[in-house]
Length: 507
Image 1 (cartoon, rainbow, N blue to C red):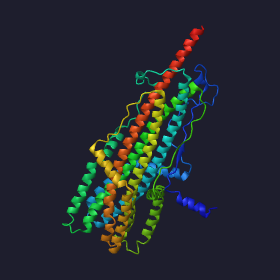
Image 2 (image 1 turned 135 degrees about the vertical axis):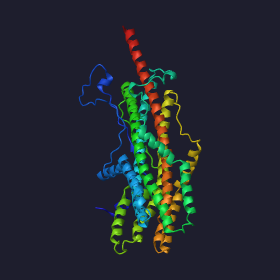
Image 3 (image 1 turned 120 degrees about the vertical axis):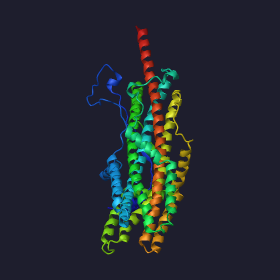
Image 4 (image 1 turned 90 degrees about the vertical axis):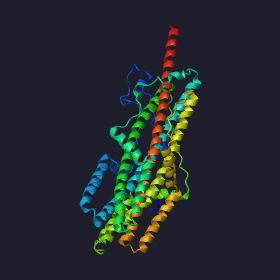
C-alpha cells in the first residue's frame, strides 16, 4: 500500500545521480592452472576462465523493451528509412511544394519525429552514462586486487625487477592485436560526423539563415517565406536526429568491443597473479560517489530523467488524440494543422537546450570516473617500477576543437537552459497576442526549428569531442594493461628459472 511518504520518494527520485557501484568478476584458479600437466578434476569448471566485458542487464522488462526501442531507433535500418522518407519528401515537393498545406504537413511530421527522437536521445545518453560509470568502477575493482597481489609479490623478495627495455617486445600471444578497428561504413560515417559537427559547417548554417532573412523584405515577410525555411530546417533536423542516434549506437558498439579486449587482458593478468600468489580474496566492490550539483542542475536532470523514461512520448500520444478530436470543430483548417507542430516544436526546442546541458555534464562525470581508473593504473606502475606508457592525447590545440569546445560550453550552461525556457514562454505569449493565427503559430514553429537545428549540430560536435576522448582513454588503458601483462609474464618466467635452478642444485 502506497503511503504519502512513498509517493514523495517516487516523485523525488528523478534527477538524482546517485552513487554507482560495481565489482569485477573474480577469476578462479583452476586445477589445470596450478598444474598444466593435469586436466581439471571439476567438470563444472569453465573451459575459458577469462571474462570479457558484459553490459549490465536491467531488471525491469519495461526498461529492457524501452532500451531495445532506443537501439532500434539508432540502427542502420531506421537511418535508411529516415533517408528514404526525406528523399520521398523532396521528390513529392516538386509537385506539391507550392501548396502551403504541404509545407505545414511536413512541418508537423518533422516536429513529431524530432520530439520522439528527443526522448530517445535522452535515454540513450543516460544509458551510456550509467554503463561507462559502472565500467570504470569494475576496472578499478580488478585493479585493486591486482595491486594487492603485486605488492605481496614484491614483498616476498623472490622476484627480480625486469629490464624496462623488454616491455615493448613481450606480448601475450592471444592479445597481440590492437584495439578493434571500424569497417569502411563506420569510418565514412565517422568522417561525415566530423564534417557535420565542424565549426565551419555550423557557420555555413547561420550564413544560410541570414541569406533567408535577407529575402524577407522582398517577399513581404509572408507566411510562404516563413514556410520555406521551416521546411528546410525541418528536413535538416530530422536527418541530424536520426544520424546522431545512429552514430551514437555505432560508437557505443565499437566501445564495447574495445572494452571486451581490455577486460580480457585485465582478467588474464588477474588469473596469472592469483595462480602465482594463491590469492583467494574476491575483487572488492568499488563505489563511484554521486556527483555534486546545484539545485538548477538537479531540476534539469529531473526533467531529463522524465523525458528519458519516454513519458514525453506518452504525453505526445495523448496530445495527438486531443488534436484529432478537435479537428472537426476547427474544420481541419491550416490553424488546426499547425497546432500539433506548434506543441511538438516548442517542447522540442526546450528539449534541445536540455539535451546539450545533459550531454556536457554527463561527459564531465564520465571523464572524472575514467581519470580515477588511470590514477589507479599509474599507482600500480609506480609500485612495480614499470615505466609509464606514452599516453595519447586529444589534439586540443586545433582551432576547430577550441572554438567548438567553447561554443559547446556556452550552449551547455545552466543559464542557457533557463534562457531557452524563457524563449519558449515568450513565443507562447507572442502567439497568444496574435490570437494563434497562422502567422502567430508560425512564430512558434520557425524560430524553434532554426534554433533546435543549431543545437543538434552542437550535439554532434559535443559527441565528437567526448567520443575522441573516450577512444584515447581506452587506447591508453589497453597499452598500460599490455605492459602489465608483459611484466606478469616475465615474473612467471623468472619463477620457472628459479625452480629449475633449485631442482638442479638438489640433484
